[in-house]
Image (cartoon, rainbow, N blue to C red; front, side):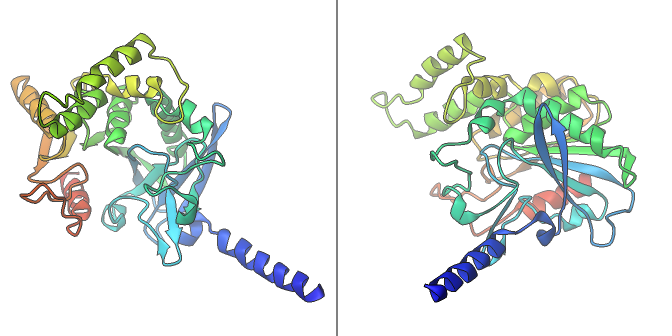
Length: 327
């Protein structure tokens, strides 16, 4: 029994040590601040040795799903940002903010196949579900920026906010409210709203009038519009879907700061970004720049002629390089 106890103690200790990973282990500063009775986790990526050097902020608003910011396995960490941050880090302190009630760091064995976090019931945590809507993220992120801009290592001369997919809508609305934002990067969004992307994706799968799968979404949308504040669900709530389906073009068209719009032409929202481009030209909005990645999908992977996605060709670092050139 004595030897069993020793073996168990050694095993338990090794498991505990393996789980005690911190953001600092992966080269990030981990900051926290209170917001509406909760704790917000903030990761800051700076060039090594330049953590105290005064630089402007580059806030990246990530897409949907309750994923931990840092996901790791025995080989190391997965990318916190979808791009290598080193290039942008030459000029900025890069910032990313956690999803509510989701751990900032987790081993992939704790996650679903899509790297989303599940609680003990196998569902998204209730705290995440009830806070997962547009205005929560917008107001929280602005509070984070106000907090960070008080730090002596942050320059107030420039403030860049970028968002991809769901994050593009968050970033766009932030820019209409927080006037210290000097540059906006709107990536992979649908300027006419999320529900239209859902319908477009299902239209693409329809093959005949006998399979009108997209038609069901119109009934779903009617239910959402009738109950836009319904916040009860094990996934996306009506409140979340409604808030992200308000056309972001309403926010974008108000902006006078420089805006870069990036999108894959094979994305379900690609045509609607073309429409935004047409409208900005018609309205003589010369503060907009557009970068269309021809033949790529939502995350900038090329789409082959047979419709398959080429996951071997990773374009995110090129996209981030284009962001830096534009800035």
